[in-house]
Length: 197
Image (cartoon, rainbow, N blue to C red):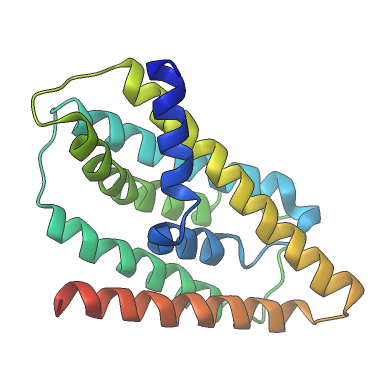
């Protein structure tokens, strides 16, 4: 395999593995309020998250910004908890067509949290590359791999939601409460593991 293919695969596998429970749980919480018909809003939301994490992934991997990995690993569960709590607080309000798609508060939140998650991705990538490496091709390929993994996970969440809401007649509010509650619980455990290893 070429260098590009190798890092593309590494990026994809980094997000599509049980070891990425924190990022998978964040995607679950991020998509919980939406159904398949909301795909434009989900696209805008995930694009906002992508912009955020792509920026810090590049800056950290290229050595432009520095941070303490332990702090980021603790902040990631907090982003999940915050997203889940926002979902739970708004569980009684359904998304309407009049609400903006791009200039929306959830997108700003996703962008901000993407900055934190990008630093988390960069820790893994830098461990693969070595401290003195400043790769561009590897960074680009890894980022595309992460995005492909995210598309797969988000699609699976939306399709599962469509199946439960459509075929099994699960109420949309129940789906939101269950998925957000699960994300909150998982994030709490992840945070405790970071604070008291």
